[in-house]
Amino acid sequence: FRNIIGLPTITSFTPTSGNTGTSITITGTGFTSATAVTINGNAVTSFTVNSDTSIAAVVPSGTDGPIRVTNAGGTNISSSNFTYTPTVFTTGTLTAFSKCSGLASAAQTFTVSANNLTANLVVAAYTGLEYSLDGTTYSSTLSIVPTSGTVASTTIYVRMTAASTSLTTGSIS
Image (cartoon, rainbow, N blue to C red; front, side, top):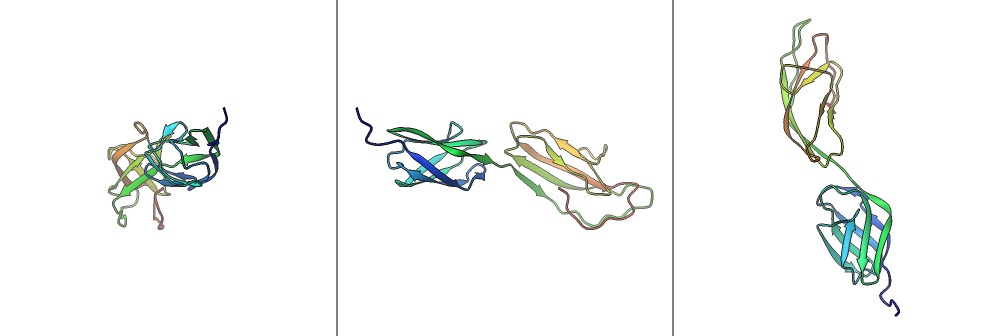
């Protein structure tokens, strides 16, 4: 018995990172008879064989790892990993804060949500500000635990600290 189809080869893929729905182009050889494309063993959402040397594939949910292409001759694995990236969304606009000396300012709010997380979502302190999830208990940072990689839309309360005397412009990260 002789394998005349040959093992597929993967020479590169681009982009090397993305999230659910990202279209990646896989370059190599032996793709004409491709029957499966996976990322870390998870089937891509869909794939199209463009030619013997090119496949377009759509990234499934939450998958980091090597890309595999299978044809009748077997399976080959990429030499590098695809990196799945989280997506964080914020809505709302903060206006200028005003306050009396020695007192915290009135709170303002914005919302945050995220998906594809592999760790907690941390809202980091901007000098002179403090944050809360309930509008009562404030701290310099917040750590929100995702559920299955997702943080649902969450209201964040932000105010100037009692010790703060002024703020320069900047971004909350």
